[in-house]
Amino acid sequence: MNLRQSSFAIVFLIISLFFFQCKKNSEFGIDLLPPDDASYFKTDSFDLRSFTVKDTCFNDNSTAAISASEFSKNTPFFYPYVSLGYISDDIFGSMNCNFLADYTVSTVGFDPADISSVDSLNLILNVDTTSIYPSNAMEKVKFKFRVYELKDTLGGSRTSSSEVDKYVDLNSITIADTEIDIFNPRSISNKSTITIPLNDGFIEKIKTSSIDTFKYPPALYKYFKGIYVECSKITDDNLLLRVNLKTGSKIQLKYKDKSSVEKVLDLDISSFNNRYGVNKNTYSATIQNYLDDATNDDSLLYIQGCNSLAAKIDIDTLGKRPKGYFVMDAKLSIPAGDSVSTMVDVYPRMAKLTIYGLVKGQFESLSGYYNNGQRVGCYYDKKNKTYIFNITNYMQNLLYENQEGNQLYITSLLKEYDPARVVLKGGKKMKLKVTYKKL
Image 1 (cartoon, helix red, strand yellow):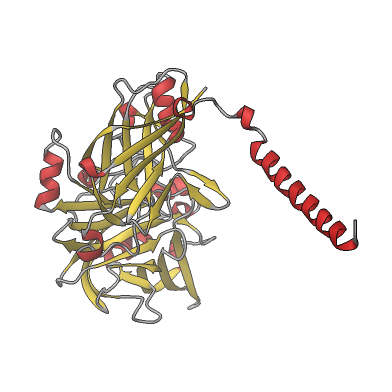
Image 2 (cartoon, rainbow, N blue to C red):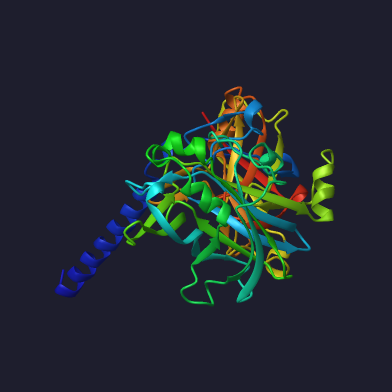
């Protein structure tokens, strides 16, 4: 065999070994595959019923479940933010956002008897300049503010707009009643606070109080139980602001003592103080018709934050329990309504949503856990304009663990204080696809 023939033989041997190895790799593990893939996996879809409902006030907390009997009751609210202002449009209707709060003394050693003269007494509200609605809000909007002193302590229970009279006598004399120009912080620099002057009657209340009133919170609560801030728009322009009540917001008294030394008394809202958003809604005729009709499916689902509107979905599970399988994947897909991009100014981005499920008599968050800093369980598919909810564990429990209840609720993620809104396509447009795997 000459050198040329030897080289050819070696190349042929290498190529043969290569193809032989590829064949072996492709066959590796073939005996581990199920004999019949069609019986190894199953997919199914479910009939769904959808309704627009009023959002209920329960904690958005994945570690705490609220029983079904308490789902519509009020729960404590200790978020730092509230919304304040007024918005209105033809799709959702109008929303007027106000708040209640009580205070604690942050100034040490204040003695009312030491006041010689008062320079100012103001309610100062710190505005979060990153959250302004609508995005094209006017540079300046005039609001009328009324500030009422509470007649009863808040006591850590959530308050709806219909319960305000439990804490406030709206026919009483206010401690502030004034019209103020509110500037859009996005267009006007150094206007990130709202300052509301309080009247002489409240100044006199502080001056005639006891030194012990400002030493301990219980004494202050007995003497000054808190405030209710109500705003109403005067012009036709919309403006809704997010106010940080925990940081930078206070009642501040500037005065001179008997020695003419300038001093300051601050009443702040600490982590333990109550602060509640009180939001009043007048819904559009379309939404009100949906709310009044609890029988027929809603073709559109209206979701709005500030504890306003949510979507309720009923799942028909009759006969949907294939024996010998478990739920490997379950995804609920709901397209965004066309009005999202053409008619509604969503605030200030596509609304982030969260989903709850009825689990053994308890409403639990199905998307309230995190992975590498990202919320898992719900995401928005921008390409197809569709919200995707991963409810695999919920469907496994529902179908195979004799779980009671087959209801889902979808709300705005930061529904306690963020007025984010979105319109979804309900009825036959929704899809729930479940993939089963053989045990």
